[in-house]
Length: 114
Image: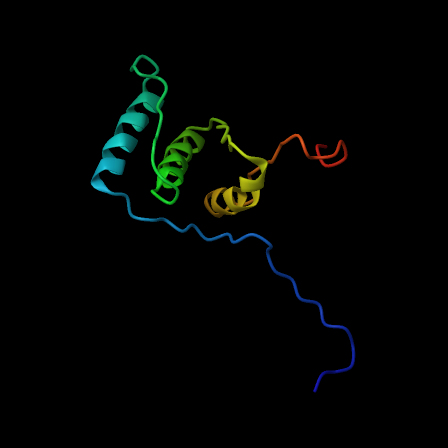
């Protein structure tokens, strides 16, 4: 039985715990190359393409590289190829960087972009 009054429940819409997944040996090798390029602007190549099927761990590699950039006091940009992928991507990115993620896309209203 309740007290009869309204109950207030507060919870985060997005999870805030980091959920690290283990990297494969190949992912660790690729991440190492990316991290070297992040640390040294003279290292080539400066661009990397991660190719893999859905669920193969590309986002985990991206997030670890982004974490290194953030720890250096820099501001990375994470691009998503399709607006419909924004909610699930936001959940993953926010779990690494709670309260530090901004979303911009063409379907936001002028008021939402402020």
